[in-house]
Length: 178
Image (cartoon, rainbow, N blue to C red; front, top):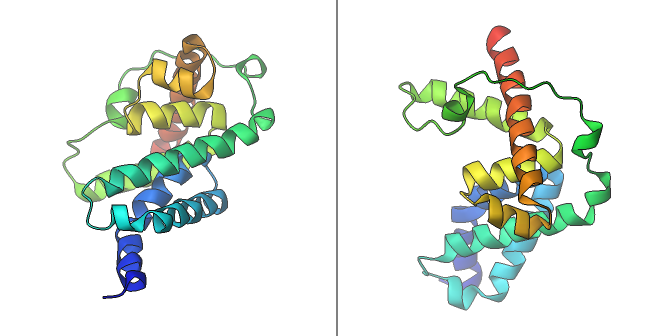
């Protein structure tokens, strides 16, 4: 099999994961497609190292994450900061377990919830969406997120808290409208 055919198989095996990583962070499919394309261009440059390497998917996810964060930092001036947000504090329990739930009994129900969650995540402003994705999906610590985004840990905690409140509100509204 030629390098091109092997790379095509490699791309098909990893394209969904790379795109999902990017779209969760940047929130726009068009930007995520560009990031995925750049990720695979970088992979092509290093394909000799990545082909049949068990760490290839981790490398791709790291590259997609870094490219997404770099993309967002270029557009940071467009982000709305918390001083502009008027959010009420809400201590309703259960959202965090729903966000990270692993044991939903019905796979179709789980799939529907994931679609709703993805839609709600995309609706969040980037300064809330990015820390939530890095914390809940990629398992980064508050310190790692703050260092990478060059903001304080307190801002990251606030962004995640307010993002959770916004997600909870959207998800509860979706549940009530059925």
